[in-house]
Length: 512
Image (cartoon, rainbow, N blue to C red; front, side, top):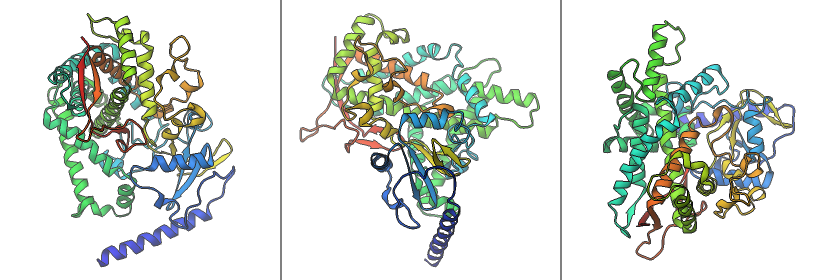
């Protein structure tokens, strides 16, 4: 008890010292960024709870405008609330070298070997980060022709998933998300290793790992562990979470790295890991001193794929099914498109995608409507005069995706699911230079832009086209006669690292 009291007093005194120092150094050139004043010492800290960052950030955006600054204890936090500001911050030559870094996090430092990999990499404009992006993109094309050659593998997995769905007869209620999660886990194993390794135990491992990262990566956990890192060695919730995540990390290393090295055959690239192992052995043979592909880097990239490849794809597909389930008219429109372009005697292919603008528009609208909240922070590595505003060094800079994709000035009716907004009068997709397309920034921008966007959007197309070619999907009602609500503001939708529906039940009906 005494130790906790003294630790608390020391923490408060340290915060006071840092706060006073930051106030003394709060000089600079440029317009002060508008935002709430908060309360002395704590700033806006007590406004925030887990899961409501997007709501608070959007409330301040509506009040203060395109750029907002607030303070959490001694940290300065800036929100960019327009696609134009996000694009300039991360891509404009004047700013991109200063606003593409990542802040140091407890998770990145302790579980990704000093923030290695792509996602947690602290230096977004460093040559090593550029090298990683280049190799990672090349590794995703390990099957020869990239996304197109990977199509057969995706289709085999879709066929397996559809066999599971087919076991549920017309009007039989079932949970769809576990089936989707199992399918995506199998696909991840094939992408990484060239074969399915996702047993039921491994599927649980993937999703339990993601849940634990969700917890360890929260601002509250991160702040406590930064000030009291010794807690990771002690009994209690913080130490327990760290030990559990460490065990899961070792299991992932065994599954995707150790086993792959044991079966590695030079000259034969079965998946992403073989490509990375080949590059590692190449560096060793050349006696490179500053090697990029260490074992630690390889695992950090594995973690990146598990987190980004599963959690974002699962959310995107779940959101699309969820929206379609509640807007049957768009299922029928996509099916008319499928019957016209594909017919019923063959399965959809990626070559059909350009001829199916309605399906693409529905995918884009579902990602806009149930968009992610506030994505991972960037860090200002220098004082920056950004469009006349002064962003201080070490400020956390967040792209406010939630607000950007629900801004009434841009979208008119942002809380309405209306895919036609992405189509012109002839029913074709709007050109890339159209203001609505430029405001659709789901996959990010600049050096932090999602390197797997092409693969992700191809998967979404194939899963959706194959499912809707065969079936319609309907929401199931509970004992009271009610069903879940498809509205990003409802309690049936969760906003964490990504936005996705809570587990839901549905039923299917064969088309023919």
